[in-house]
Amino acid sequence: MLRFAPSPTSSMDVESLRVAIFNYIVAKQLNEDLVIRIEDIDKEKNIDGKDKEILEILSLFSIDYLTAAHQSDSLKYHQKMAMQLLTKKKAFSCFCGDAKLLELEEEAKAQNKPFVYDGFCQTLSDETILEVNAPFTVRINKPEENIKFTDILKGDFDVSPDEIDAFNILKHDKTPTYDYACAVDDMLMDISLIIRIEEHLSSTAKQIHVRNSLGYTKEIKFAHLAKISNIPNIASSIKSLIDEGFLPSAIANYLVVLGNKTPKEIFSLEEAIEWFKIEDISADVTEFDIDKLRFINKKHLEQMDEMRLSKLLGFADLDIGKLGKVYLEEVSTLKELKDKINTIFESKTTCIGFEEEFKKLKDCLQNAPYHDDFNELNKYITKETGLKDDSLSKPLRYLLTGEKTGADISTIYPLIKNYLGEIIK
Image 1: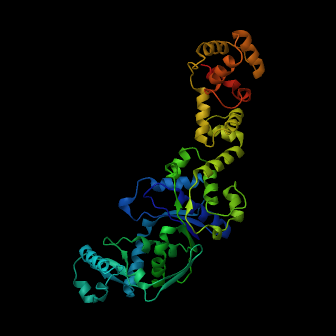
Image 2: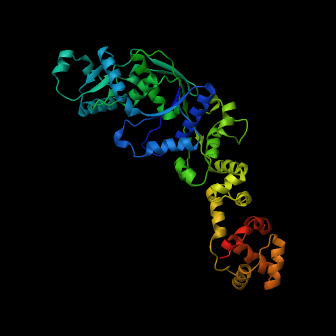
């Protein structure tokens, strides 16, 4: 079983989506299930509706999964496991207040040492604990020996007991801390491989320690993905990328290519399942390249069925899909294509530099019979208005497309001829 564990405290970003995509691919390769775990235990930071938005984005990217659960729904299991640790003396109640802990931290800082809990409350007797009428947290005992593990991308790690420390597993309100909840949930969900971002690498030894303390012996493998740097504002979230006209298929394609060795540059997720290797992902920081994403997006648009492209542009006309393909010589996103199409249908009142010619053309075309062939239309206009050369071609291009430059008008006309009444209004 693999899991993708996003937090509903912010919009999904490119690093989180990359994690989801890799988990999806590897789950398919291993013929294992993928589960979604919304890590919502930090209630104060949760944003209403973000959990639903996350699932909608996964659906948009065709990332299927066995089930989606909220971490907060497992509170009773988190507390039950903590009670087991307390009963077996593998955890203890801690009554140290914030002031005391701050004092210990300041002492460690003054001595240029990392903060390590002094273990005071661990020595309290059961009788003393029963007599204390004060709020308390639950801390897990510091491990007695180093925690060792191997990361598929980062190599071997050997973490000392002091680095792990006797950390809190339940807060004062008896809700779980992040590392503890993740450790328990991964155990309960029978997770076999954890693919996540690099910032969680420091949590790994703590989570292994929790499971060891609970007597869990199954080995869980890890792959921590390096950070993506220089992410531009346009890619600040997956939603913003989609709003800017990048296709889900192209975004997914790019995130698999990023920091990876792939047999080809343009592909679908289903194709990637055939050859993807998590071991080939770079362990170093990778830089986001918006130009590369634009290139890949353009390729996906070029390969798209013309009727489907037409529908994405707001029509259901094969000719508009073909027109979109013509404009792909100039642009690379769906939003830019829509702007091009919308410009064609916008009202045009004049053409600077050709004001009189524009008026003649517009009057002529508004009363012209239907012409299937552009050359025939051109001949008709010349005969009716006397316009020719630039006096004809430049205002005519602007009238039909809303632009003064671009693809040959003889290429565009056959694709918009059925809309002349709307265009020349």
